[in-house]
Amino acid sequence: MTRLEPFQIAVPEADLIDLRRRLSAARWPSRETVSDWSQGVPLGVLHKLCEHWQTAYDWRATERRLNRLPHYRTAIDGLSVHFIHLRSPVADAVPVIMTHGWPGSFFEFEQVIQRLADPAAFGEPPRPAFHVVVPSLPGYGFSEAPNEPGWNIHRIAAAWAELMDRLGYSRFIALGSDWGTSISTCVALDHRPRLLGLHLIPPLVPPPASGTTLSDAERAAIARLEERNRTNSGYSQIQATRPQTLGYSLVDSPVGLCAWILEKVWTWTDHQGDLWEVLSPDQVLDNITLYWLTRTGASSARLYWESIAEVTAWFTRPGGDRITVPTGCTVFPREVPRPFRRWAEPRFPSIVHWGEPERGGHFGAWEQPELFISEVRAVSGALAVDG
Image (cartoon, rainbow, N blue to C red; front, top):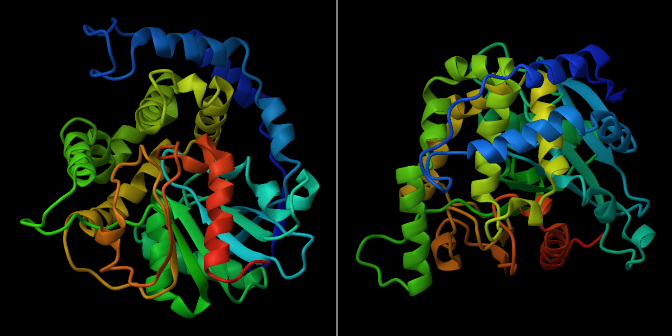
């Protein structure tokens, strides 16, 4: 039950043929009645991307590229968990587990894994170096979907602690964004002795209490959060309340899945009106195709049903457990919610690094791998655990 089984990605050709068939037979709605994204993904944008998906996108090339990384599976708490594990050639490198969120996947970290593990191979100083572990969340990608309720962020954190134990890492850094931030925080709450430190992108904390004098930047961040809650949070309410109903469409229609994920990638990414300046169409389709081929539209959404109420409280209500683990924080400029250091210090009294890179949105490692790598190295240095 504790064996680590090597895993190769090998999608049946029939699944790729079926995908192209479904794309060619798609039924399209009438176009939006506005000239922007305020009603959702514009018809022309989605039609063009899906045409590329059907006629030019090459999953087999992606598969070959991914299989150059070491993939594994292991059974933890009754589920088969998929993960990438790249050991550094530096023997005393720092173990780090990097956790993605929704609608992301291990693709968020693909561009940084090898550079963090073996910087010398890329012409950089050999240290700091990291033993890198990138798991797929339960119900995401090649990890098995839970068949019972209860797989919340705390249970996933326990699974990650067990995974790192099996890999021989008694202590490690827990790094994450989106759901990964919450899960890494739960590792600190529930398994504190295992951690060398946290790297949260960003930490989830509420704004100051009413009546606090705010800077212009703080007021702007709060206004953006309020606007997102008003116009861009419907997906969360649906996934938190009726993930199964939504899931039928996401698993049956590639166009529907593409629209559901593309809207969030476009909305949450740091760009000036053109997503393809930051992420290529093939990068976005890599991630969407993973959701399609693994049929995880419903199972991934269920994590909202399990845990979004707890997480929402973390960044909307004062109080909460204090996290005394040494913590590095990275806040990319287009992130929402976008906390400030003085907001975070009451809950995270041991902040050792606060980074605000000049570019990047919600998918920092995917959008800006160079800046992300710099932040990981800075946090490692501040924790005094450079490998």
